[in-house]
Length: 466
Ligand SMILES: Nc1ncnc2c1ncn2[C@@H]1O[C@H](COP(=O)(O)OP(=O)(O)OP(=O)(O)O)[C@@H](O)[C@H]1O
Ligand SMILES: [Mg+2]
Ligand SMILES: [Zn+2]
Image 1 (cartoon, helix red, strand yellow):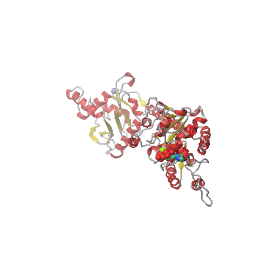
Image 2 (cartoon, helix red, strand yellow; image 1 turned 90 degrees about the vertical axis):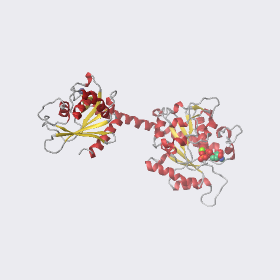
Image 3 (cartoon, protein in one colour; image 1 turned 60 degrees about the vertical axis):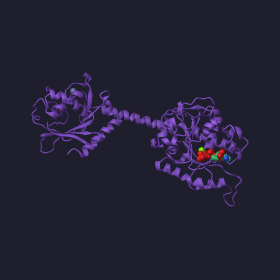
Image 4 (cartoon, rainbow, N blue to C red; image 1 turned 45 degrees about the vertical axis):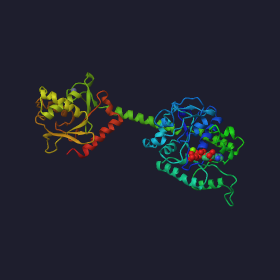
């Protein structure tokens, strides 16, 4: 179990049917688990708004750090744990959860929160009687799911849970039905003598697992919910003489056995998967850093000599990639677009406008493909939605001869090192220049930002470079 330290094992109690004994099962199982294994950390939380958990476990006088709602909004679980009665921890309930359903889209979000919760031991999760997104999350995060069924309609309903697992391709062996609220006085004639045997038979016939243990209906157990002080009393302490007590003991023992045999809980596996992802991202980032040219291709100075790197460039064939100084690139655009010499006054005025536009758009250069040797270079600037902002044709006069005229010499130097083939001609393809954060220019090569960059390049190059 050492691999699972600081990662919880999740036991979810779920059924679409209301009133089948979910909450009774969740809260009491937590108490039995704790009683049977004293050094095990046991935590209960509920996605329902009945506050049963609170009424059962609350120790008066403890200050609250937050509720299940805070947990689902990203607060680390371990910071929300309340010490409760019977040695069981709980996270206080909330009646505000429905409001956050829309923000809770991914089916694996809860699994992530569990893996980052810092809680160890077993978490027992009580759910609402429906299959909303939170319940789905609770199912996918679970190492084990108990589905209470009390009659044919509730058995009928389980197929939705099984279907959810099929949809996501998750192993259904963690799911098992448990007959609950079984009235032993009801007897049938024929093959299935009683309610429990009948439910079991139907369950197994449909390919559902069913626990060996079932939970009887007991008036004593029912009465534990109704007390003058508003509290709810546990079976372990207040209904020891009932059959239900031994049934919970048996069930808790089975849960502990399976728990103790579990090497890697889902929360732990999720953590492992996530750190592998992180490693993979780090590697991808380092691979992208490799081959970045050490100097600014416009002024020729090495980046370590200083100067703000405000733009990242790459060619469509990825042969040339690197950073440009903000001033170099903005200055170059200014000369090109307005045919201005750097010494003129108008040039200084235009700089600001060009700088602003360049810092929120993608600049693309590509040779005009008419003729064997391109005589023109096309320049296009797009916003990040792919909308064309400016288009210019730039003369390549003097480029092949190596003539510099003061206006286009920066461009020619840039083209030389990015787009020129071994034969001195411009290669086909394009050169894209993207604005980057001057404070952290390399960030553009991180997974998420780089994916965005490639996406806009794809959009532009597929449809807009004609
Ligand atoms: N073993 C039992 N014997 C008798 N009554 C029981 C037993 N277990 C639960 N009950 C009673 O059945 C009712 C429903 O139980 P519980 O609240 O646990 O079901 P639930 O599935 O959580 O309901 P909901 O879907 O509304 O959340 C409660 O009044 C509870 O006291
Ligand atoms: Mg309930
Ligand atoms: Zn430069």
